[in-house]
Length: 201
Image 1 (cartoon, rainbow, N blue to C red):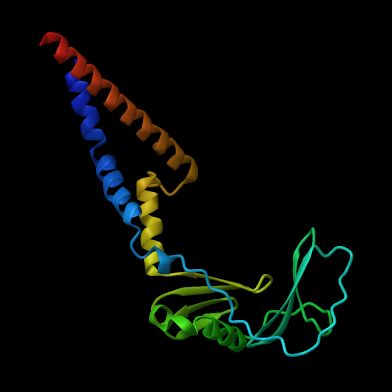
Image 2 (cartoon, rainbow, N blue to C red; image 1 turned 90 degrees about the vertical axis):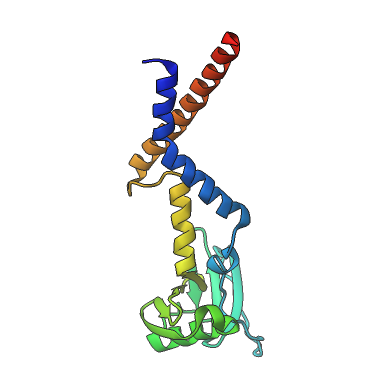
């Protein structure tokens, strides 16, 4: 099999990955909709109005006193874990009721109704909105993550770009390496053809 034929076969094999790389690369360059898709949400904080005395423990690395629509929170980090405490009693604050979590989430996203709309059904720490965005509350650290259709689309484009097509981490790595090898071979054979044609000319 001559070099020209090998080059054509490699070109056909790499046609789909090359088109995918070009198309997704253009999206990553412009980054349309990234701001909303990966927006960071924090609970809405209110002014601390009470004089609360905190007695730090020896193993506390960090402590933050916050006030949300659900009241006061003391977030503590130790070498082993993160703790969500009641600053008055010093006891661990249990996960609130579904109604209270929905209230906290509703308050947090109230500044961006266009993206989040209304808080709909949910259970535990995960809730959905009327605009199709999923909200998840990390109660221990009092953080909120969001995942919408646009987030899914951009994540899917990343998977396409990096040849994560097989649904398995190990298999995706093999496919990625294979794609790079084929690309290098395609370039190498193309350059070899170029040099051979120049020599003949």
